[in-house]
Image 1: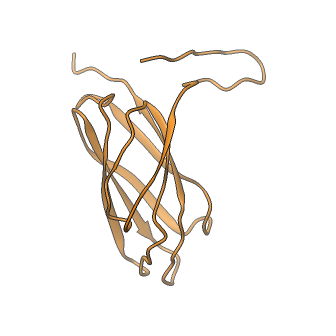
Image 2: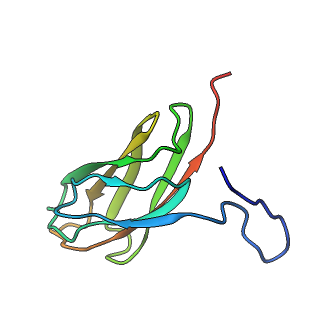
Length: 121
């Protein structure tokens, strides 16, 4: 894992390399991005109010003992989505996006994720 951690005034702490991928077809379509930090642009398929869509991120940098942090970065209606990572396994994790806006949305939102390396012992 290539990373540089800096604690210098005005500079962020964390990964300095990552990647980006755009989801095809619909919000349930899986993506592949083999980086410890990245952005996923979701397909702009409609998501009804109260509905959820789950997709798999295939990523060879992920171990079953890691923690994945994911959030709604930009594009789309702020506060309209709940985003969560789950089912973290060797080589993949799932992301669930829920629409809590009060109406149907058809937005190609962008998600940021970071993999925090962990260990069981």
